[in-house]
Length: 264
Ligand code: HMG
Ligand code: MG
Image 1 (tube, rainbow, N blue to C red):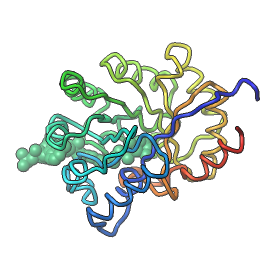
Image 2 (cartoon, rainbow, N blue to C red):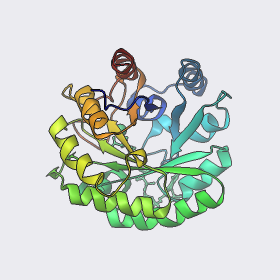
Image 3 (tube, rainbow, N blue to C red):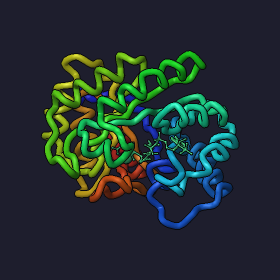
């Protein structure tokens, strides 16, 4: 155990991945209060909202408003999802400084989620990432269904590597390798993330884990053993994707913090 990383970064995705799945409309002011308290709790990177089509995710239709009123907090970075140029225009209008583009390792999922194939999504992102970087923003990229797709089943690690590499080549600084429906076990993490690490440094990878079967913390340990130091989680374990049947909540931030602190 002595070889485990001494420090990790947590990316809190509750206000985005958590709230995007809540059926009851939450007032903007309440979202801002939630985000403010997450920042006060010591979290340093918070995914605050999402500039997707309001019809796709009605809960986050107030993204420009939320992002424009984020509570100022020393040392805290706020980010938001951006699927295309229109999303970037809205992000820039809001003043947010970090965005995340998102695709997947399976075409069936990206078609349902963003109405594009994986290749089409990468072609869409290339100019968006370029424009975002030119405007001084930083960019992360998600690869959903990196282990299992709700429509296609098991996903090839080479496919995940191909998509991750294309995103990194655009200039994004971090790939969030995502277990969209929380189906992965530690063996999958060793296999797929281990494969990525042959050509991608650990500092450029994050693990974004959902917790459908209670395997998320075990997957964190597998990630730590591989040298991964960035983990996404959601306060209270809220979360899920309406376009991924079976997606349960995200790994809960409080459980992640407990385990990591207990481990030193
Ligand atoms: P589309 O219908 O193909 O878009 O949707 P389009 O480009 O054909 O445009 C159609 C209309 O939408 C146009 O308006 C655009 O202006 C407008 P019109 O000219 O007809 O009046 N439009 C937009 N409006 C606001 N914001 C935008 C935007 N883009 C176009 N950004 C689109 C394609 C990608 C927009 C849509 O499918 C979408 O918004 N999908 C998002 C789905 C989503 O948010 N899913 C959940 C997040 S992903 C996730 O949870 C996984 C993750 O957590 C990792 C993991 O766990 O795996 C990240
Ligand atoms: Mg997610």
